[in-house]
Amino acid sequence: MRFEPSGGLRGSVTAPPDKSISHRAALLGAMSAEPVRIANYLRAADTLSTLDALRAVGALVEEHDDATVVVRGSGLREAREPGGPIDVGNAGTLMRLLPGWLAAQEGRIFVLDGDSSIRRRPVDRIAAPLRLMGADIRATEGRFPPFVVYGTPLSAITYEMPVASAQVKSCVLLAGLAAAGTTSVVEPALSRDHTERMLAAAGVAVDRRGPTVSVTFTDELDAQNVLVPGDLSSAAFMIAAGVLVRGSRLVVRDVGVNWTRTGFLRILERMGANVLGELEEPSAAVAPSEPISDIDVTAGALVGTVVEAEEVPLAIDELPLVALLGCFAEGETVVRGAQELRVKESDRIAGVVEGLRGLGATIEATEDGFAVTGTAGAALRGGTIDARGDHRMAMLGAVAGLASEEGVDVVGMEAAAVSYPGFMDDLARLA
Ligand code: S3P
Image (tube, protein in one colour):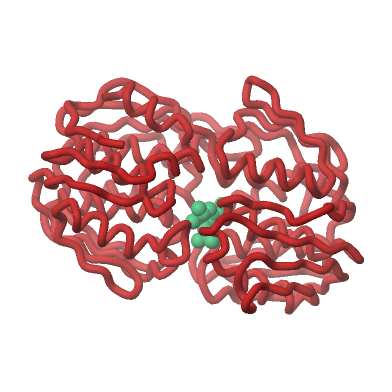
């Protein structure tokens, strides 16, 4: 798919529903005995994989035309043993959260598998804490899918996470609901807290003290209906395009602005971008307790910035865009402490560095990030970028094309459907 240099992007788009919150809302629905109604559910490949996985373990899931999903679950201790492997598709969040629930389903066996990208992504990071709780998990080569979860009674632990990860944290907290006593997770840096918010709304005693978050044994979840906010990680592509393409002025509506997700907006602010939202006191919130705001973007000049480890989890999926923005900034943009990027849907350090270099950027990879030398406003030349089967890399290439001199060919644009099926339409409308 080719993306030609564009004139200013103008108008407004509504951000697609949040992927992280959609996964969690459906999962908590399946874990509840009472039905849960989820409005504005993300209908994209990843979150449809979640609905199918939950059907496989016994939930009744109705999908309505207006993007409402009703999940009729089986209860906290009543996941059904499926007839065959559970296919998580491309969804890392599903692969890492679901076992937190399944590990405690006594006497039942679950096999989880996914696509070729999933088979390269480690599950030892969830298997390690779950095993400390008494779980029985057997993975391919000790750490990859397909893997088997043998349900067994669990005990509470305090787990110091070696790497900040909302997926690992969420997995341990979900397992903690079935473990007698208090299960705690200590985060090396804050990561997105959607699971904690949703569990608290479902009646779980969630306690946060500094870097430690705890849950206690819970009889039944009373999950609330959810209205899913717009996904900042998807909106980020439109925001970056608006910042980079000369003459742009656009609004992205109804974006979730939970502080643990808005690191990208703070990075943009440091870079001098003209991006406004009601971030401190959002005017509206959607259930349960996720703040939303419109984000107002005007194109303008950028300066380089440094992103350190503690900021990484707050902007993890937007770091490829930080590299692209850095290409146009004055001075150097450096990202450190982001080795997690190597185990995302693709190796995003290698993909970003080789991809952007192929378009004319001056960028170096490091073990745990990258360093970009910007052009102080001059456009990237353009060329071809390979999405490597990764939705965010595909959309990165598209935005780079609009802001380039000669256009960009993206190989594998169809990957965008994993999180943002309407991406091409939204972009076309703005351009
Ligand atoms: C996610 C957490 C992040 C992020 C992923 C979604 C989540 O992964 O990269 O796209 O929904 O919890 P980690 O927290 O494991 O780094």
